[in-house]
Every structure is written in structure tokens, then in C-alpha cells.
Image (tube, rainbow, N blue to C red; front, side, top):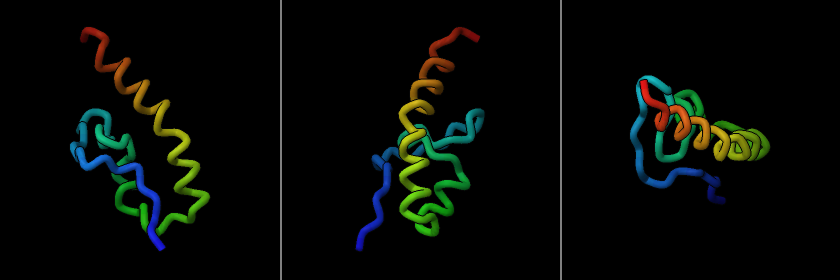
Amino acid sequence: MSIWSPCVKVCFVDPDAAICVGCFRTLPELAQWTRFSDAEREAIGAELPERKKQYQEKKARPS
């Protein structure tokens, strides 16, 4: 049985945001992904679009 993953094979962790800018998971989430239950993975997956939006908005703002 395969485990669903939001990975898009664009792995780069933004050190300031501490998330992968390919899938928008945190380092602890990446490390524990296969150990999470289906419900935990689904809950994290549901948060990813908002994380992406917030990340992109933050990066678009001038420093």
C-alpha cells in the first residue's frame, strides 16, 4: 500500500521559514511523514495550500 505524499520533487528548505518550498511541509513533518497516520497526513495536507499562500505573500513583500 502506498502512502500519499504532497512531495513534488522540488526539495528546497527555506532556512528562514523552516519549510520545504516544494511541498510546504516542515522539517519534522518531512522526517516523520511515513510514521503519521492517514488522518494525520490528511490534516497536514489540508493545511498546505494556506502555508503556500502565506509563504508566497511573505516573500512578495519588500523587506
